[in-house]
Image (tube, rainbow, N blue to C red; front, side, top):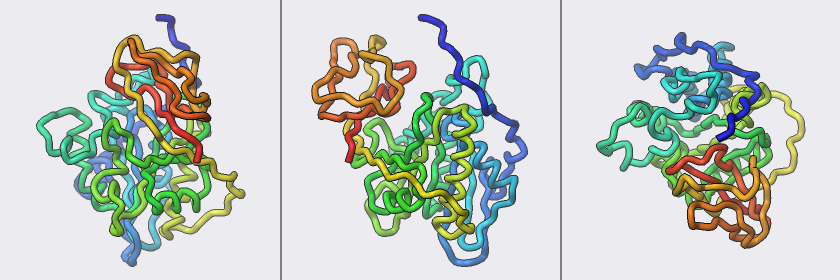
Length: 312
């Protein structure tokens, strides 16, 4: 295997131990109540340890003293144990320690017999997620692609993403990810129920770029402003929205998984065009204009290889 070039490391981890105590009895969770009626909004960072932009947004909100004028604001650092394992010589390796913290949010996993750093932390954060009316989960991507929203196909989620406007690209999940339950689909947020609020992921761009960190800060403030917790700031007119519907999540089944050409994301394929091979299995485009998202930078058996979507 050829040695992989390191990405530009414009943003690096900082020491976040000053935020460890929190203020609700759960490490790295901070809650601020306005004393006035209003929604409870959760801004969650570091679901994956090397997605540093979320840390930048969370520390920005805490360091600048952002407080809700109505309702309640909770800010959480989800997986500091993985974050602290960052190595600048291997910056992709601390995404997770054992399990993917963003795929274990079903009751089967949380109430099950298995143990790992991720399951321990998810069980610890479970009441934090359940208490929130609206959730922003901040993420980033391995490849330098345009930022985008990811959310279950409920009208309440689309309304929020469209109202905020940036990013302008949306990945809509009509049936979830098929590879596990993400945080934004835990409990009532995964149901088309009138009691649930909005729950969205924002993928801010490549992990270590300053632009990704800057966007994470802007979107977190926009999200809070949308629900009235802080004042809305002037913003340029957003670009016209581009929306995609997730059709398939293709998992890596064998060590022989290979794409037919280099991919970073948002490439398109014609119907039946070969996208990848996985051992003896061919992965072909199910439709014209099939768009690939988040192709695995380094395919690993048991993890997602690529998401296949169509424009809507």
